[in-house]
Length: 365
Image (cartoon, rainbow, N blue to C red; front, side, top):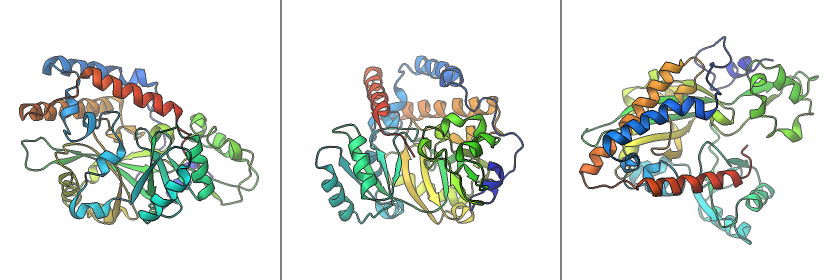
């Protein structure tokens, strides 16, 4: 069965059925897609006199959440009633004897298996895994870079996942939702004859980007799924790791905007970033209900609706220019209020450290 058919059968099926499996630029090399975005950043840096200025957009987060910040740092700042919406989490440092400390921390946080493990410092879903038991946790701890911190988070089993981008200028009384991305798990469905490798190769979308899935599924590629068996190809909700993204920006409702205004206000001086949630029902989400927060990202986050296969290159670049322009404008207003950027050298050091760590993390699920 084709991947599109499998998706339509899921609880969080795409809103639209499309003929084209990919947009023509969807998997361009980063340097090619982001080249004009980088030029735009440089132009803004010259205009505002500081290439690192956006790091002041969210003053209470390291580098404004551009790079190198800890996921714990951001989640820990959520206060008030909104904190109940955050999926429970704890953390542990990868060290000898870390298993005992991890299990103690899980017990204290009332987190049971399955759970999600992710690097405290990272992006793009790198190193994120679903751990189903003690053996998985022990393996993950052993594979993780020594002395680095791991976030252990409650697994929210709801099938729906969305990334919702919030922007508020400091002079504005309230912000707005500028992007909604609905994330879909790519599936293939067994026919009782074909191997998993063959099912991936035959799929109109997965077969064009098999490198996103084959290495991760290497131990299962010769398995023959049963007729009708649904096989997810990736767990982490990240486009560059193989998840399918759909533009849902047009779905923003006053109720959803109000709910995310409350979330943003539950963090001190949060003006710009993407809040990732899991949900069971899209209709409930649009009423501002029935969701859990799994991550909050700052300036380094992206309005990921641009990776919808129907988005044009012009629309994608326009969205990038708008959001990074907003980050500079917000940070400039914060600078006028006495907040400082981290400076180009510190920004570069944080980026280098993050890149080094990401290269050492275990493969994501």
